[in-house]
Image (cartoon, rainbow, N blue to C red; front, side):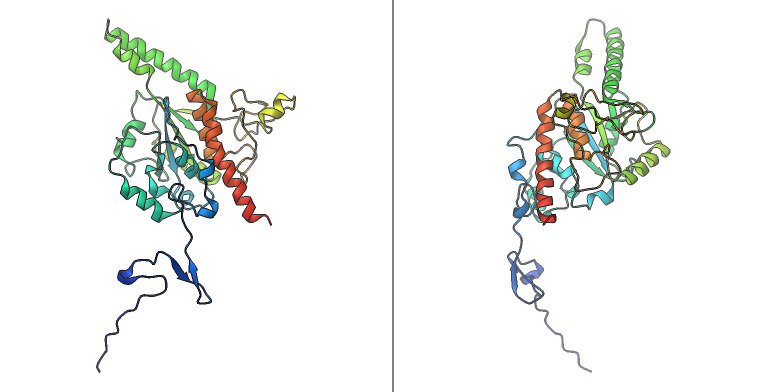
Length: 327
């Protein structure tokens, strides 16, 4: 039999050469539909663009560096909070692979970038893995395992201390290192000055509460956490700062604080309970990764404006999300 080779015609929405057509697709009824326009800055469809809530100048941390260990399942969620932080902090969006919105726009931005910052010169790095180890970039693991780096892990484990206590412990360790350095280098204070200005490494687990617990156990069992890590927890009240100032007492759930603790002393003025309520947390004391990160970094940097700036796009996203779901 003779087989005739049929030439393949481009299908709907495909241009010559196999590339996707940039302007239109065919709907189920066969009518042409325009593709959604994607904002090149926030990588969202223009209809839900977040740019009005983003800072005009990206935030730069001077006292801390953030490493986020993100569960692979979390990376695929559309309503996660970490991309909002990435859009606000300088250099944080360099890891475009962690963004699930607007992949074409993200790829375009990545291609346009000519030089990459040094691996240890960053404000936020997102690692999409269940645990630390050999699969993580060696440079990042070197930072985490450096015995001279001060590292905080935000997770409400049984041995976790408050953020204030964690910062006090870091201060104690730095003074100890300064004294040892001064004794070794009598008359030379260069090392002492360097120790004072070292950035604190803050680690977060970005996942649902179930997966975050699994990640913490896997890293503990595998002995992947650095030996000098300081585990800290936040104690969010059930009311806002304004309500507490007006005399109403907030109760901090045991998921994030010690039993019997009723108030938090270092929570931000602009704090609101259940802020990211487009996802259902196990309790009102469970915060999104963005909320935790904004709280901790604002405290370390001693700059309340950081918290306000990072919460603005989160509030904006929640408002827009609800406008499409509540009719």
